[in-house]
Image (cartoon, rainbow, N blue to C red; front, side):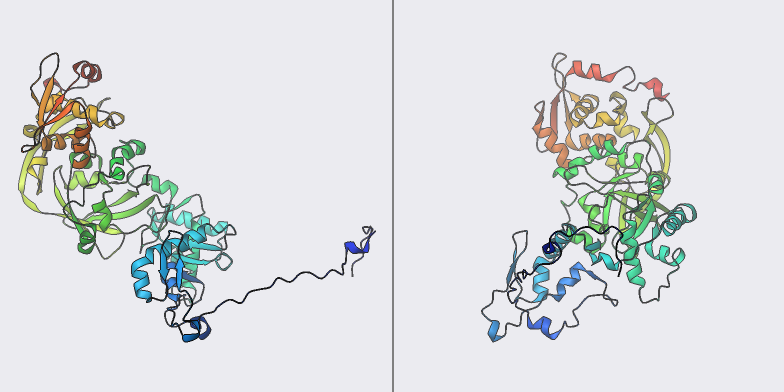
Length: 498
């Protein structure tokens, strides 16, 4: 026993001992299903080490309620936070088919709201916090150097385990180590998860900034140009449902000039139907590889997932691929492969031809549109091919900077004036233009859908539908405003082309 040199005085013995008996709370009996008393069946989905479970599968341990006579009167219904009531007396397959997503969402929500943080998650995998190993600073540093310096590309979690941490894939706790790795790396500032379901990829923040980097257009401007997709104007599933596209594993896409020029594809519902699911609920980026087997070409593409209510999504990094292999108006097919993070681009080929096509000339201080000869064999949609014959009048339209392209109504007015047939007077100028031609020219400047463009025309006071049969619209133009917005170098002239 240890006796302190200066013990504290005890004036009252009750300070250190008491004769009061503590109140023992009464615990009500809890009904335990025969399922649990008899032990779980083969539907138990815990891993071999009993450490982690998939939430979607873990609900498979829910009792199917054999309802023996003594308990036949018990209510087998439970309520989820979403207001859904489930009768667990029904078969498991029926319950999961009807409410599987809601059950997983409720479990995930409960775990995320746990103030004591007793569980950790990665995707749908869950484990007790105390059972998940941590990684030291030296290990994290080695992982960072392996990704950034040695591989110089996103790396699979399995490669990190094999080549950095030297964990044998045949070891009994391999999956446990893999889960721990993915959980712990999420908290590292220098690392970013960029994987998808079936391919857990990791990159450094520095490396992620380089993949698909686009210095020609700011992310904030791009987000604004595709935000209409999140506002209900995504019409990519008009002809074919998402379920059908997912079953096919392929979509057909007509490349617009804007997409070709800046190496970008909008994150439409159609594209989302064939892309793999993201793993982390708050994941902002994923890196996918797009291959062109016909040309032996591949590129790493940065997927910018849409943020609900904030911005639309897009895929960037196609610059070299599009310019080397395709032309604006090309009809391409995007197909899933046997690797979840790899997709293939294919297209039909015709006889070689040369055309004067539109491109953006960035050689001078101010960018402008120009035409140049391009030779190609890819099959194209002729109406979307930006030849001088089709859209030569673009020289009469102002070259809008990206910040200006957000104002789609001002863009529309300028296009009407440059491409439309004049029907008004000098004091009240007005122009007529068919919808499809307007859509083609607007697609040169920005991402747009037909439904969004139609809604803009319908709501614009200065625009009127003249003929539903031909899709002809008439738009009044404020001549004073357009003269002010044109600027000294806003339009083309023939000398520029010469």
